[in-house]
Each structure stands twice: as structure tokens, then as C-alpha cells.
Image 1 (tube, rainbow, N blue to C red):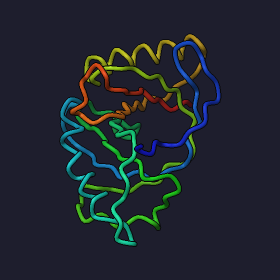
Image 2: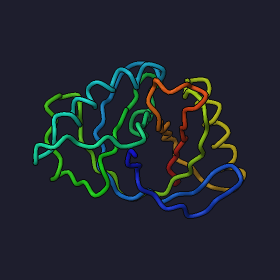
Image 3: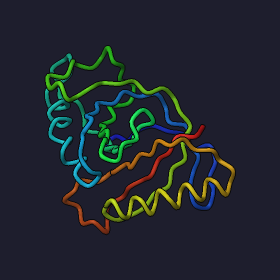
Image 4: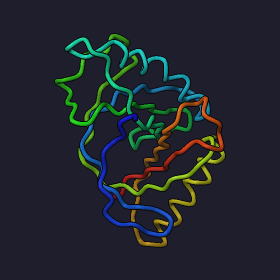
Length: 173
């Protein structure tokens, strides 16, 4: 089974969870395109990175989810960051330098986020609907959220859309 990004559930509400995500390393590609094309635009570069191997010449294990995000430092509609989370316990020192200059490695510290899952192909329209619902549910519970939003996809694109599992993850403030 594919390793998943590590977190602890801190509190569960009817429509979402509050989670503490553990520190991790991500390999990410910034892409200047619309949401619908961001994942496929960045995937080849990211897959190439994990396929190049680590310092012991082993390929880096694929993890879930693949994250498509608009970050606080860049909330342009056509600027997306697509990330692969490196295996649990990875540090920047463990990771090989990317051969492809589009791939950037970044450490993310522990953070508290809200998360809500949904099934279906994570299209722009469905993701926007789920983001709005999560933000409204968090507001109803007086949970303050950042502007950053992440769409986390757990399944390969060839899996039938109605069976795909996804999550919306938003850091708290």
C-alpha cells in the first residue's frame, strides 16, 4: 500500500477534522496554468525526481497524496504548486538534489489544518464546491483558516472518477 502523509486527528466535527500534520519534506513544482491542468503539467517532473533515486541509489517510494495548492505567498489564479510528499522521516539531507530545475525540495514543519474528504474526480468545479463547504463549516465552528488551500488526491488518474478519494486541507491560523 502507498504510504500516506502522517497526521494525528485532534478533533472531529460532523463535516471536517482538525489534524496535526507531522513535519515532512515535499518535492514540488510551480506551474503557471489553470487548476485543471496543473497536476498533469507538473507530474512528469515530480515522477522523474522520485525515479532518479536517493543517495543509496534506490528509487524514492511514491506516497499519497499528490497535493495541488495555492500558497499564501502566491494566490494568483494561474499559479499552482504541485507536490509529492516524501516518505515519512525524510529530511532535506536525505534527499538527492533534483536534476530537473523545476523540482524544488522544501521542508514543512508540523502544522494544524482542517481537512474534509470527498469522492469523485477532483475537477475545478467539484473542488471549488468542497472548498467553499469546508470554509463555511469551519467558520460555523469558529475555526480561523488561512487563505492557502490544498487539494489532496490519493488515487491514480486512471481510477474511475466516482471512486477517487480526495481531501481538501486548509491550514488554520
